[in-house]
Length: 82
Image 1: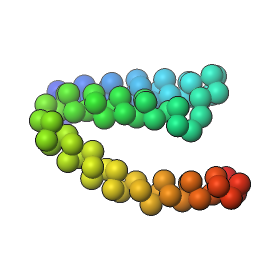
Image 2: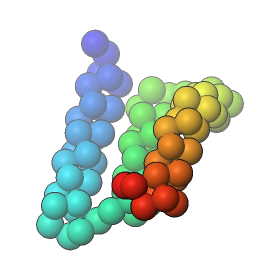
Image 3: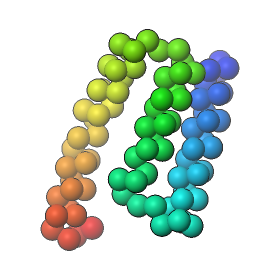
Image 4: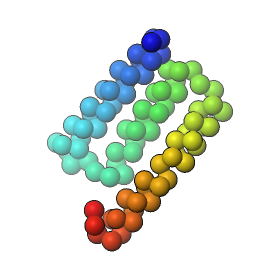
């Protein structure tokens, strides 16, 4: 593992622990957690020294993989099953 991997892991772990704290203690739910996950992506981009082009392609690929899951959650919320 390189230093970039270690730094990325530590920063993302800290952010994730804060998200868990915010959910449990502050009642943070749903879309309000998105900023923390976006911050993790930005931290990973900075520590891995990706170019803007590489970071954009990785972001788009990740979003493509999450579309189906997002649609399922939206559908369940719309029908009040969630």
